[in-house]
Length: 272
Image (cartoon, rainbow, N blue to C red; front, side, top):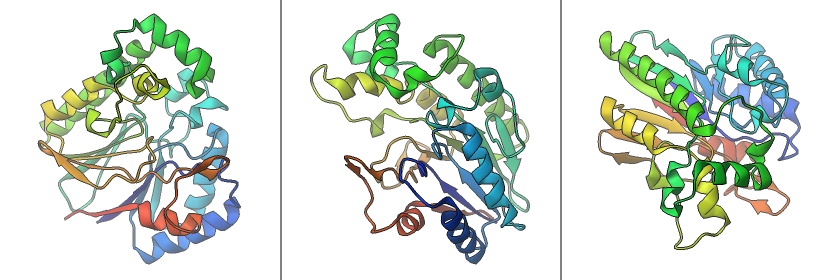
């Protein structure tokens, strides 16, 4: 059983011809015999465009099931908080799972969120982080009825419930999420500069603790575009298949074109 996971394609920011991308991706996934293709968020800056892309890709892949999470960019437009917490379309994989046939593996999906704990060395209050976010960070455009720490608490309740259910039936778990699941991937400097504050909006130490508590063997995440190599931390193997930007002032690709970068960054896993 082979699955593929990709993230942070940013098809609109990268000014890509989406029809051509879909054709090339479908051909490659068919050639790789991928049974599932999971997208870990940040496909467009509009949930409805992400949904349309996934449906069109799925239509070209009759033997591959396509599922997607919403990253913070997908949440910017075309979706409400309440809809994100539900399942507005079948392809949406937040707080869902699939059991891989013929294996003892369960793949769990959750968008994730953050609670400023990756920037706790700054000793700012949650209110100070919130006001900074609203003024300077992309996510300030995302409406929600609760605070970020409260939202992360709800995320963790969902993930713990899913992990407990998997443990009860003896499943091994692969967790796919958008936001950063471990402080190892966070870059710190010894001052109060912009990105030290922005680290607070990248993920949560509480998710890291949950992963350790449940001994999750496999975690795949997006959000950061830094070409991390897979790494094992305690009992968990972490992967980051994010593609990132080639637009404006950002040139984060290592390959000459999008499809080459996507092929290089997409993670394939075989389960038996």
